[in-house]
Structure formats: structure tokens, C-alpha cells
Length: 229
Image (cartoon, rainbow, N blue to C red; front, side, top):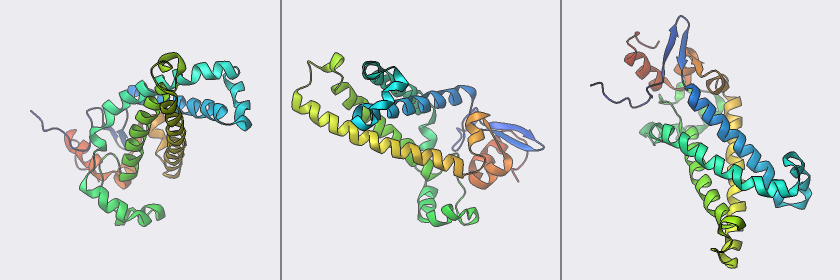
């Protein structure tokens, strides 16, 4: 029986050798990611519309105020279950590794693009792992606090003081997750070649070698197609 991979998943494989192209995400994972992303965007817009009168005009995107109030928590439930599917798929490779500490200590080299000064990494770096676990924690906080202030579901189960606290916690968590989401999008755009992983499902061999060398080595070794050089 083959040993369990430490840095890759069964769907990760070499698509071609000349030129090297690596499969990073399956179609299901990519679809799951985009459902989660668009759910979060819709939640942010509808939540901001309900948060401040100055942003109430955003309710027009959802058919008006009443429709926005009705659909906002439903989108939240969709986000929760969609992200839960992603969590099941990705949590193992997002566990901390010793090299993550070195990566964070050399964050200056990360920003300046000096990859030669950074440790070899598996499928995810420490920044990506931070986004994953921050999203996990914040989505849990949002769903719990959201249910507490969802009148149709828990209106008779939650006291007024508890609901007020839940509203505050929900708002703070919403701001935090919007900031984390912006960080995630910026990093994906800033690191050239990253977006195609979630659109086409593949990355170039050069990208994989530069950013996630341990991941590429393990895939090349498992596929018996020679060393990844």
C-alpha cells in the first residue's frame, strides 16, 4: 500500500511533461470554491445594505429591502455548507508545518519576491493557511451569531440582551471576513499564475517549482515521471 502523501491530494497530478503542467484543483473543488466566493460577496453586499442607511441603496441588487432581509440569512446558510465541503477537502493540507514558521519569519522576502530565500513548501504557504483557518473561524462565528439574530428561526429562543451581543459580534466578524477576503483576492492577483488554478484547474511547472516545490516533488515522484526540475 502506497504511503499517504504529505503535501498533495489524489487529484493532484502531472498533466504533461513537455511543457510541465500540473493539475492543482479538480472541477468539483473549483465549483465549490466559486459558490463559496460568490456567496460571500452576496452576503457582504446584502449585509452592508442592512448595516447602514447610507448603503441601503445596495438592496436594489437583491430586489429591495424586504427581499434583502429575507435572502441574506439564506445565502449565509449556503455559504456555511459550501465552505464546509471545502473544509472537508482541504483541511489536512492546511495544517501547520515547520517550514511555515520560516516562511513567516522571512515575510519581507515574500513581499519582495525573493523566493530563493524561502523554504520549500507543500501545497499551501503560511499565508494561504492563515486565510483558510481565519475563514473557518469567522464563518462559524457568523453562522452562530446569524442564527441567534434570525427572528424567524430563533426569535423566541434568544433573549434581547443576547441578541444585541450577537448583532455586535456578527458585525465585527463580518468586517473581519471582508478584510480576509480582500487579502485573499489581492494575493491571488499579485502572485502571477495563481488565478488559473481556480479557473482552469492547472498551473505551470515553473509556478509550482517556484512557489510550492515540495508539492511538485511529491507529485512527480508519485506519478513516476522523473524528478521535477
